[in-house]
Length: 189
Image (cartoon, rainbow, N blue to C red; front, side, top):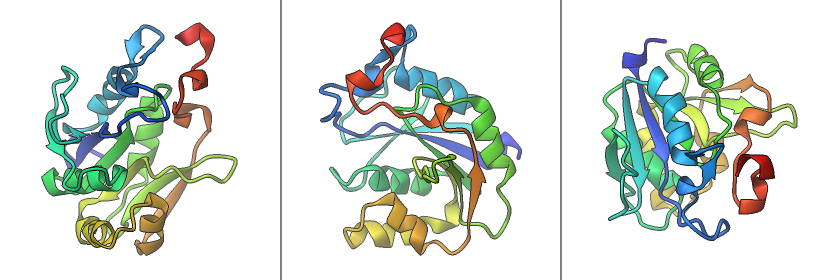
C-alpha cells in the first residue's frame, strides 16, 4: 500500500499508572520508547499523528498532536481522535509502548488492507489479537464514536462490532508491550 494512503497514529495518551511514570519516555536500548515507535511508523505512513491527553506534550517528534475527545477514556478515545483527523483511507494505530515493533510487521499489516475491510489486526501464535497495533479503515469512525459514547471502551469489543476484520498472523516478539519497568529486559534499560 502506498504510504500516502495511510495515516500513522501513535497512541500516547495514557497516564502510565502501572509503569509509575510516563512510559513513552522510558529508554530502551538508548532511545525513548515513543521515539522507537515513531521511527518504525514514519516510513510507512504519509502523515503521523500523536494521540495525547489534553495539554500533554508532543515529545519533540515531528508529528501533529491530536487530543483525546474524552479524557481518561483510554486508547479508544485516541483512536477516535486519529480517525477524525485522518485524511486517508487507512489509519495505522500503534501504542507507544511497543519498543520492539518492526517496520516489517507494519508493512505486513498494510499489505493485507483491502477495500471493504474495516480493520486488519495482528494475531500472535498464542492466539492473542493486538488492536493497539492495527490498521483501521477510516470509515469505521462512526462505530468507534458510538462505542465511546456508550462507555464501551475495550478495543476487543470494538473488533466484535466491526463487520470485516482480517487477522494477520505475526510473530509475538515485535508486539511485546511494556507495562511495567520490570517488563524491560535488564540489558536494554
